[in-house]
Length: 179
Image (cartoon, rainbow, N blue to C red; front, top):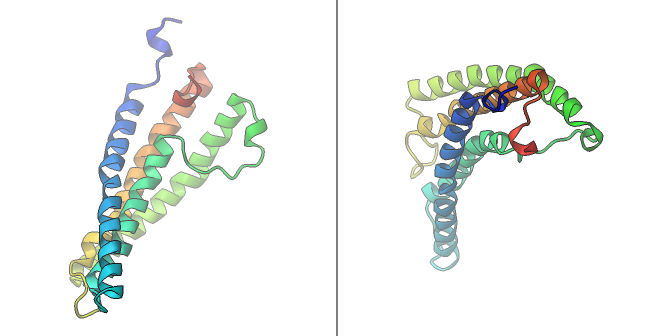
C-alpha cells in the first residue's frame, strides 16, 4: 500500500480542526466566568449587595462552555470512558466498541437532543424569553441556542470519529491517538 493511502481521511482532520478551534475560542469564557464570580463575591461580601445578571451569567457561561467542551473532548480523545474492560481490549476490539457505541448510542442521542434543542430554542425565541428576575438577563434564547449548537458540534465530532474508526477497521490505518 502506498504511503498516501495510509493517511487518515483529510475530512476528519478538517472537522476536528473546526471543532477544536471553536473549543479553544470558547475556553476564553472561563476568564469571563471567573471575573463574573469574583465581581459577584466582592459585591455581595464587601458591599452587601450584588447583581442578579452577574449570578445568571455564571450559569450561562458555564453552560455554554460545557456544551462546546463535549465535542472538543471527543475530538481530542479526552472524553471519559466507562467501559471497565476497555484497557484489556486490543486496538481493533476497542475500535469496534467505539464505532458501535457511536452508531447505536451517540448518534441517536445527538439526533434526539438536536431536534428537541431546536424546539427548545424556537419556543424561547418565539416568546422573546428573558429572565424571570426583574434585573436579570434579557435574550435568554441566545443562551439556549448553545444547546443545538453544542449538540451539532458533537454530531460533527462524532462523524469525524466514526469515519476514523471505520477507516481503521477496514484499512488498518492507525488512529491519531495510536500513532
